[in-house]
Image (cartoon, rainbow, N blue to C red; front, side):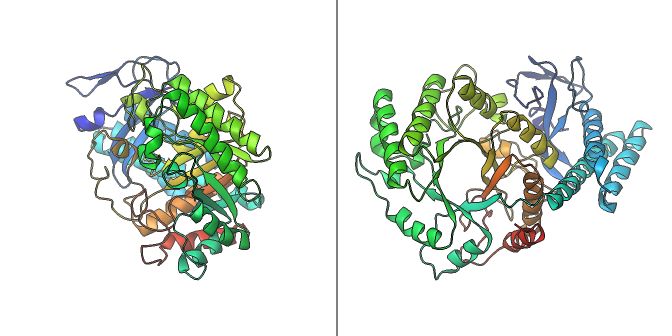
Length: 476
């Protein structure tokens, strides 16, 4: 592997909690890592033939490692083949998935005999991942067919509404029953004590008329671009007071029409333009959650996290703001909230362009499920074409975007975007703890880059029709 790929390697515990990446690369390609947690998994972002540029994991058949040496590619093959057989136990696997298992086993056999060993090991790994994903998808589809999810909400952000007569509105109501409305302070509280809900009121009229549930997003988000300038001049004590006042005003103003809220967004050392410490972020989360329930005891409160695999902890970087001695992962942050007795109803997880296979995502969801709360996938998106700044070309630039983005099933286009959505929605819907799936965005331009359901001219992408057909298939 190229040196840049070796530099990506890091270790986690079995819940994907990363160690900071402290490594040394030896001349023969061995990577020495400081590992603090036993048992551990290993993750590396590599280029796989037939698949793309993606984070790959080795987990020793779910048991993790305790010894000092891991032959990474060989162990990753073994890990994914284990998952393929595990998921495939109760389903008659498709010809395609069975073929991937056979291919992985044969390429591994050739590699062990010394036939083009490095190349054949990578081909074996690629087929093993395809096999595990296929078995997971087929198992999930069987579960979903047997357990119709009438309770599952399907949604998207609803930021571009203008008129019920536009195709934006027509297409939205055809496939979604859940809409996220923008309550960013730079728009809703542009000046201290002065609230502007013009867009909210305009959009709510359409949503109510079409029986689409509205969600408010968010009561607090420490990202510089979405906060009013006047807030950035306050001390922390003043900031706490204003956070509470804003939350109370938003929720009480819409107590009858907006009953689901992202109470806190990305407060795990990530989006932290106010440079708050970890204790202050926890306190602010409590303030917003408590204010929400005070204003409307029946409202649903969501604590929303991003970058759930927490690669930023391994690399020790964040969006902006001060860096504490040790960064807190989304899962560690949520565990701390529970430890502190902070009351919230739902765990919200963002899943943008994840440079992870579906098996890794499913294993990560197991870790969040163990928190004991319902889960919403609050934001997600993968691109429907090349972004031009991703790492599918093998580059690793060590930014949040580059380290979080990868390629899937040969490269992004409208077809793979639609296939990713169908695959993930099927896996997620088969998990009863997941109660809502929200895409981001509905119309270009989109955060994930070519990731929306509609182009700028309101023409729908293939993903729109795929979701419509998926809903019909599973009677959603």
